Image (tube, rainbow, N blue to C red; front, side, top):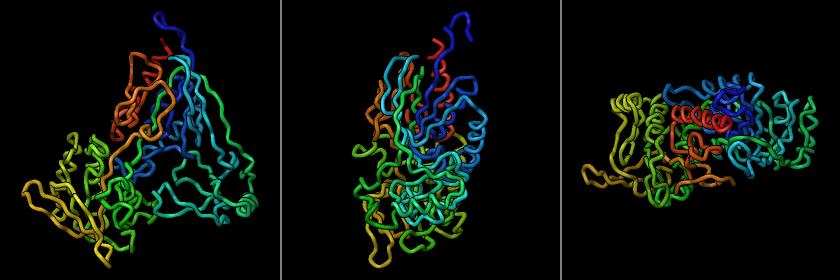
Length: 423
């Protein structure tokens, strides 16, 4: 395929990260005829979206967007998916890169039918990181109900005795503990990093008590509690005693807009807390909800309307003031918090059943920087250099963004990758 003003189309595109941005980038490029290698470090695609109960703007469940993308993925032979895989190094120039990829063993092959017999007999349990450690799962597990590929994983923590049990229980010869880690090179013309984000480590925010007091959780932990496939099957309850909370406070900008932590606004936190208030209201019509904020950012008419509707709820209270310190009430597990109302100037002391920290969005690259010719800003976001081309960042690898903005950005980066191949 050539045109009068372009070089012959050749080469492949690599997308690093199989979340919503990576999926969009890969599909947009593949559906116009390009070969795509999709690299995902987890055992399943889906990224952060798969951990949500609902996402904006339509408040869809993850099944809404992911099922459509997975169907498109299955129908397109131009995309090769590598899970449990990480990029080790990127060498070369635009149009001619050699990418070294390391793949860890799943210990389960393509014969797997997800019958679950291996999980039934497995006795080893591990922390369930999908639920942020709020429960445990078997060492023979399906990552979650929306996992793609729909295939079990055997955790290396499984002992010899358990390995024998699960292998014997599998009727399809799908369990294979002889699998080894492998490293290989792929030749591509462009690479798009859609490596996403991590919730900021709330244990680093000393004054907010996360990790010290059981009834202080993060916004993503609440998202998992509210999800039907979460640790409580969708019931929002206090971690300490499974009590239905009657008073819940949200501390906005927990670690964001703070020169000691994340100096920038993470864009999604305000809307996430407003959404979480609706989750709580659905389950507990009389619960009182307090949102402590610096200022609320609800970009766009739809988000502003969502905020305006929530303000009509007489049991949702907005307090302009940052939570300064917290402690635990002796004997009850309730959380005492202190904040200053910046409008009245009064110091507020309040006791609530549960405190939710609206932790910010930290780019994964700030924690695990790719070995590639990339430019990063001070916070670890990748700066796109379109004049150089070849290597690009999509979605939250480039800037804090919601799902809609990430998808729009990902489509643009697919086009930029294609343009690199057509130079």
